[in-house]
Figure 1: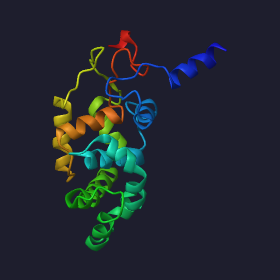
Figure 2 (figure 1 turned 30 degrees about the vertical axis):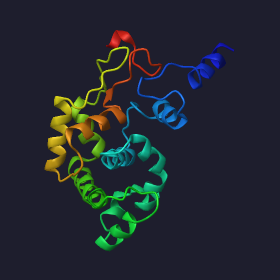
Figure 3 (figure 1 turned 30 degrees about the horizontal axis):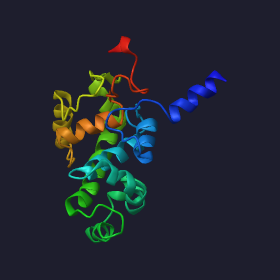
Length: 202
């Protein structure tokens, strides 16, 4: 019974990070099930990198709402298929309902797919490449009870610089830091959030 009560509390009345609206089920689901969880799967790491780039200048909720349509339009974000898209095909995708209609972002998906595959070929996997920046162990964010809204860090600047060397676009240090938070390279849940790491680790 105690386990059932705990599970029920987690789903409904738990304390979440301050950026999560109390009346937004989409944000809550993303926060509870994805944000800050360590991701090692290359496919999901690529998907989140593309989505973070799509978000530039927009709200994250806009991207979450359109995520299924974006994936469907962009070949389920399969980098092997994306690198073979022609300019004409990308233009068609850009004009599909529900996608982010931005030419540089649209064509940047193909560019990033090529860079992603280059890293896979030369480093063994994108996951190994990315997690090497944190010695393959998630960092613990130094957040206050109300949260610290960092825009970027020296590490996100370093990763951004290296990604650009590989040919990636829409990977500025602010986007990269949001990406680090999303895929769990850094656990930045607010202290007090039910997803936060134990205080003895902070």
